[in-house]
Image 1 (tube, one colour):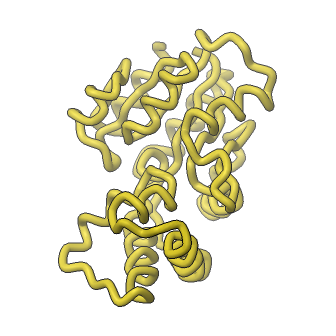
Image 2 (cartoon, helix red, strand yellow):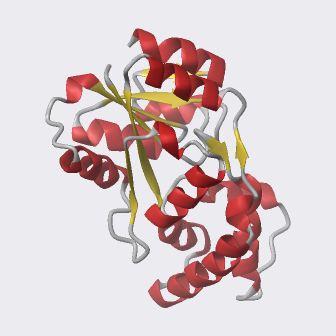
Length: 215
């Protein structure tokens, strides 16, 4: 493989604290309280609007209000309540040294992803970053991947692979005809990734670092 497309949340960084706290902030504006915050990790990976609708049954109007409240806190605090997984920068450096091309393919809005990458000083490793639009356009992972390929004139998918922690990453890759690697250190289970059809599954960053140059 020559081109590696990486998901961001749950694959390069652990965004749990910032996302969960920002979801709680949004829900509080509706008078909704949560007993077990762990259930809110379902917001990590899928498009934000999709999660508010699926998990809380919000209509379109309430979904937009919830997204607005989420972003109010997320841009101020949540985006910095984030952790770079151990070993990620070493892995990225090894891939760049090997002459590989690295892209970001995230359902996160592009401007948010840019802030995260810059905050951890890992933006230098990526040739291109494909994300969603703030209005919800290009939120499906297949659309995000396709956009990255189109913008870079890539037609041969045999040289590309998608790396992510949720079924959305795997399904998105399969939809466009690309192989995928599922990672278990993020927020998707082995069952989720296997059922989605991941071509490879690794348990930690060390395994990922060893696998990718061999593909």
